Length: 383
Image 1 (cartoon, rainbow, N blue to C red):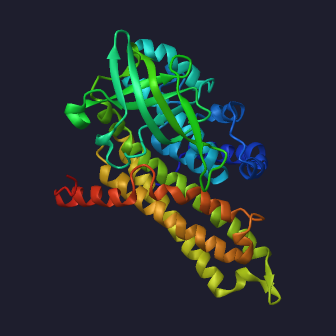
Image 2 (tube, rainbow, N blue to C red):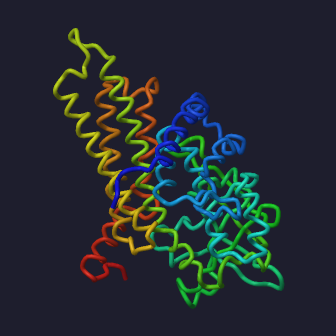
């Protein structure tokens, strides 16, 4: 594996960082402190770089990017504003699902508005009683004439308050368990549902919601993929999603490193910069080592994705390592900042809040360990 970025990747990374620092970073703190939701206008500012649709072919408006390039872009966006990253990558996931599994009619109807961010998407899998055990989905979908009738609740849905549409998973045949779950494209102009915001620890500008469906109608032609194949469709994106998380964490870790180095050079104690103290340098060294390790494990998974090779173990390892080590990096950043690290006057307290949930998201880290163990031993700990 070649770890050197080509000239195009280097230029793109530089241009994105310059743009984000100039156009996006100045508004981040006001939005986060006041919990102002990210708007479509803000999302559209980053579209030229390919944050939505970047991996899709150029002939349909995509960027034809490889995974390594796209993930490096995600790292840069996460370094500046994790909430904006969440909004765009969730919508991008919906777009990718429809491109890969949708009918021609579905593609004609939904791809262009998603690419242009005229519509923002959500991904509704989790329920109040369903987390890691996705085969136990309780939401039901019953076919009546030309519509499916949905009943149930989805929770912890990113973009749930602001989105215009999304992909939702429901049980269409309870006798088949996980093989009776179907994916649906839900458009707010066609399907009525209610959304309630969930107060959470971090990423305040990307609202998370609980969605309530009560005899909600979805057109028959909005089934995504085949009836009963919903979990297979969801599983197709898991390796990608877990590798993505590694780069999200790397971006936040890099932000912690950057702000800590700056602070350690400027903060004077005992007549000299605290960066001259051995223990502060030890913290910085540990942070740099952990951040580089996160990036390397993410690059390994991205490389395998680009080669279309199996990477379940590598994606889970990258997700597991990054989500746990980024918390250590953020805690060291807070320690370097002392009392200011616990205050909102400096950014490091938000970095910790924004990243804390990733040991839970995209499959808990307990599940990742079981996946890695199963791959190594050939013995499943799952039922």
